[in-house]
Image (cartoon, rainbow, N blue to C red; front, side):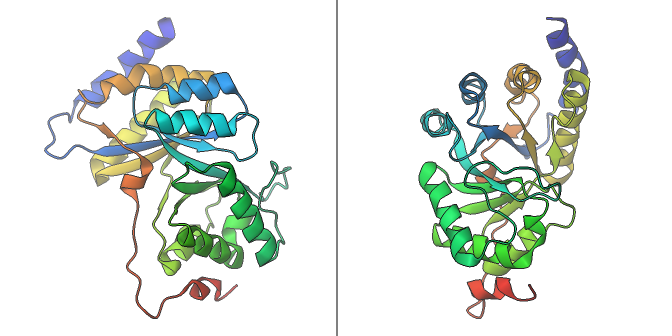
Length: 258
């Protein structure tokens, strides 16, 4: 209870400052890593706002949670495991460094078949793979063929994923804020307020969080305050950049320079 009161006390003053703005700033909150805990995943599905649910394919509870999220009006993403600089072991079906095009496309198609409710895909880890033009080109062309979009979790400051998506003509977006790199109320609150400030400055902003109990409890308290604060919580698909594609632009363009 004390933690909840602290959250409201810290958050409310900052939120209410600009509640009278003419155009409501929009935020999207993506919750990653869904599928391994049924209880924590269901808590995200039950949140009182249109958060976006990023589900890891082949996870034990992923299929069912994706179904429940979709039925609850939440947007669903495939949270695709991708090779990291740290060489951490990938979840089943992940995109490995060094895969050729048929191997990568087969892995992507298998993942998409696991989560048919998905409207887009974002990367789980991926600090190595998202820096590479060629596999990103293969991925973006495949997503475009499925009429999906891509959100870059920005696990690497050298990611070329959005650049390649733009070249292919794929709708895309990128994370602005990580909510819970530090799993404590004060830090999550600071990051959430940073998200709100960015949205008020630019009109929109995207956060990524995780189904940690601390994050769930925080969001349960603050999401009902958003309307009074003049903030709209929207599916991430409403905040995408959709590049114009000329007739000279093809999927193969994204492979250049790799």
